Length: 204
Image (tube, rainbow, N blue to C red; front, side, top):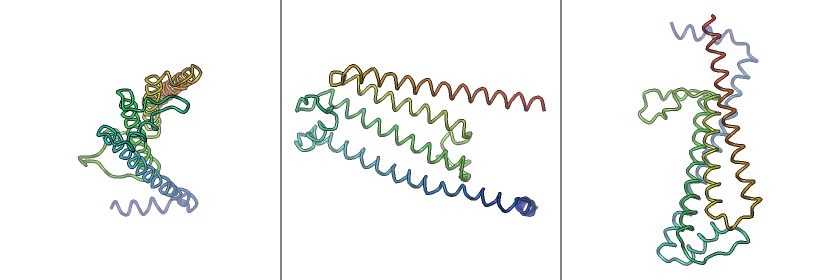
């Protein structure tokens, strides 16, 4: 009975509409490309982590690479592994992880929202947020993730503030505040839309 209903529903869809609906699969290569970008981040994470561990054990090549990663262009390098250097490297690793989390949200949430259902209901590893994801929720979550990434970058800058000029510090702070205000605006707009839809449903 269900199959007959599906056949009838499909038959009622105009050919051009069905073709346009199928065009959503053109997004699949984009999400697969993001998976490859995820692989690059995994490789980058392990390169930095291995260099950090090598620096701790006195590997000069690893130490040199680590110092180059955290030293701002034009700033003096201490030439040794300090607590600040370790903190900056660790924050860099956290930054990579947060960007990786952002990629996962875009890949899984975007595919579920714009391409096809994954049918993960009941799966023990289903992300909690995926059960109620839609375009609005996805935008708010992405904005929140971007704020987190911006916070890490700002923290790295302030820890190594002596290596930056005042204009750079002010610019990064203003950009972070702009991200924060944008996320609040997106969340507020989403709330207004949700209330409007709820009131419309009540009147019906």
